Length: 270
Length: 276
Image (cartoon, rainbow over all chains, first blue to last red; front, side):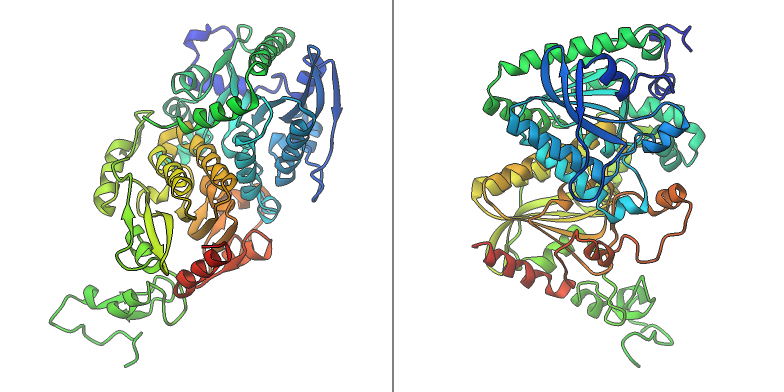
């Protein structure tokens, strides 16, 4: 696949790159994009989700509140991180940290990489739907500049639950979708093997989403994908985040909130 | 012969299906008029059958008070979506023909026990009540209208979730509708969310769960992920009451479960507490 040029990659090829086991994850971002990170644990209600983490971070001298899904590397880490599938306590922790950002006058930078919110019975019992819904409402009026980066998989409501903001960036080989291609294929084609076709039809790649007005900017990746040269990929992420933070800083919070409302209101208005 | 027993032979004067309705739950035969008058609640087993948008408006609002707006906002097909069973455009046309509506939600002003409200009522018969861009736009405009009129917003949800055929644009309707509701709340106006059977996926994970009050009808299915997906994930069978309104209430996510025949008066009472 790495030999194919970027232009020839199908949507399904890009899904494989987005899910690649060696794709830079939140730990790599913290290590290589941030000069400092203080993790803040817990939602103060039930527990500390390991599939969605956050804290104070410094990026290129800028102090921010960082939140992000956590995919692990290797089996043990992935089991600890629940493969990046956040539980209600993850979304509630994210909200708590975003509140701190507002209070301390810090911007929020959110890194999205999840197959989806955890579909388990405990997650249902503790209100997965309510946790995501409240974040959507809360993020729409949060008085802090917010930069969202779709890094790998943007899996449906589980991604959106930390992806409402002022600038939505997306890595060149990330995907962002209302449903996984496999899920869509099994429901609408009644055949899970039609996932490549569903991936194409759903328009889940960065160029398609830019055209649809869902994302603002595509962050370039090294040829073959971010995993082939993580340092280069992370340098691009850092550059893009800092440029967008600098732009957002120039806008008053009142104007920012109005623009954020208009941005999301306009989505799907044809 | 009691009302739920099927007669040996249907009266010859009319086709059987116009005289007898069958409860989808207990399979009792009920005189159609009794069934309709009860708002499609089974007098035998209390099963609350799904209502169309118009039927819901009839049981919830003062007769003739509903004035629809934005009915011209219809389905968009931003992806030009086609799957094995045909094009989304054709399915949307069929849904519109079946329901007589242009989208999966009807919005307008209405009176509930003489209290003026802005009302949005979803219709599960329209593509499973799925949240498309037209649905989201109608709901956003309803919330904005409530702010402009300084009236409470009532949304009755009935939806399987996001509308896959609109892909990511459908997902964004979750954020869009919640942004509008956040503004309504900032304006100090009440938002009552009524969750009916079923309210799941992207609708439960957006506007349906953020009411000042979340109320539901008995036994309504309410949840985020589908039962089958969860069973596959945890590799266990789930109890029968999983994701029912009763389960959701006991876990702290609903204020009340209200039988359909009491719903109108209950909503009016809450609105009076809210100062209307």
